[in-house]
Length: 124
Image (cartoon, rainbow, N blue to C red; front, top):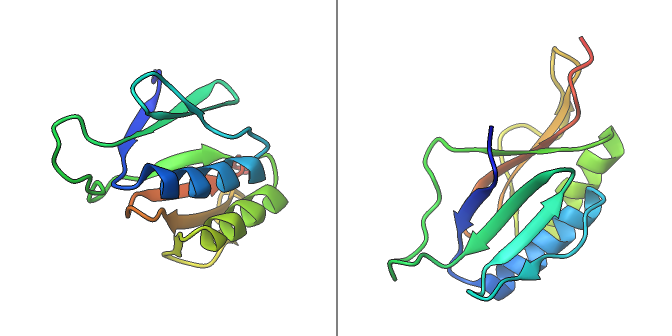
């Protein structure tokens, strides 16, 4: 359904540190920079792009929006969460935990306030 998700940042250098670390924890590579200066992360068939807003206004986080990232294991979720906090992310909601459907999830806000989750597949 989706070709990519694009989010805004007010500091691409800071965003690169955060996303390079969190994508590495999920088995992905570092971001690439396109001709427009946007960061592009491609992994497991999906793409996340990070950019400064083209309208020149400051980037703001979506209120009520969450970007979900697939993780292969509980250990990947935990590594993602640790990497994000180490690079300026903020732990939010509950600590990393198993949901009633068997999925293991963790939540962070990136340094620009975007809400992210890493989760394993549901097992029940």
